[in-house]
Image (cartoon, rainbow, N blue to C red):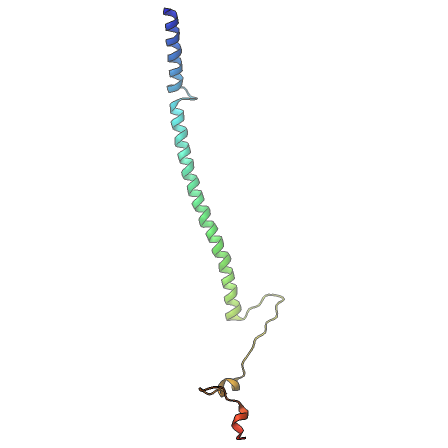
Amino acid sequence: MKWLALGLLILLLASQYRLWFAEEGSLAELHRLEQEIQHQEQVNAELEARNLRLEQEVIELQQGLETVEERARRDLGMIRDGETYYQLVEDEAEKGSAAPGGRQDKDDNDGT
């Protein structure tokens, strides 16, 4: 009976040694792995934020090019290859002949 108790005590101490001090499966390794997970989660969060900023920058650049193109077309009269540009110009005589009260035609001034 004494040998059985001694054998069980040795098995208990051996299992406790593995739990507290061994390289694999110990509480120290568990703590190290938890710290590694926290560090990796922090790195992942930083990378996700970076990806979001880059995605927003891409969207702004895409929209920015459209805005630049729109302004170049409107302000500078630029056109793309293969497009035909039509500019409608009002006649200066028609602009100046309109009276403040309404439109006045040239035919109304001849006295008939």
